Image 1 (cartoon, rainbow, N blue to C red):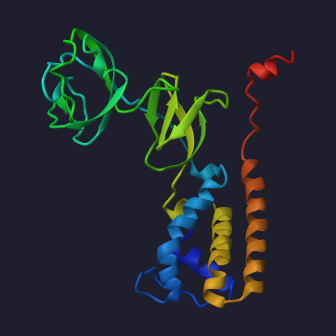
Image 2 (image 1 turned 90 degrees about the vertical axis):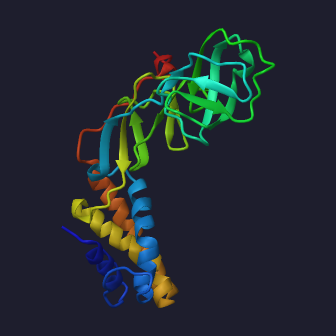
Image 3 (image 1 turned 135 degrees about the horizontal axis):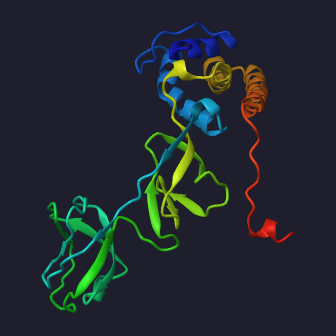
Length: 261
């Protein structure tokens, strides 16, 4: 099982540099560089391949569509929606209101929220049509797709949704937009525990760190180019080996493929 310092020192010794202690913004040149860049490079490398040790599956919770039960003709407009969950400053999209249709299809800023009400900042409802019934309050704009599912906080790269390559979706602002009412995901997560790294990933990560830091510490262009060649060779081999840990996936048949038969 590797540690953060062991991986860093493996990288440094490969370019002939002395080993270091804990990363620190006030340490030596290598320790300062590692403090600033180690996590970013780890995340970048994790994103580059569907590493099996860094793969997770979960079922996502859909962003709610909150039902509106009352909208008085006031200035500003006050929405009644029990347990709406919005906070002051949030953006809220209003749709499907009967009566006070002036609000439909528009996005507003939430103000003066309580557990069951919130104001639409700056919206004067005194000249709007009287509210009749219905209405939905959403935290997103349902244009191309009907639903939004926030991704897990540790998600670095989405691999598949609903065990399929064919479902239509788009990833925007760390959320999945889709017409699917239920979404399960397979994704690469941010593995921060070096003890959980696959041994070959440790080797590849150290090689990448060597290549990234080489010129900064050595001013040696030839050694830097050599370090990048080694890093690229190692990641190519590691991807090949990692992809063999399971049966190959088939191709999901879509309309274009089926039309050939």
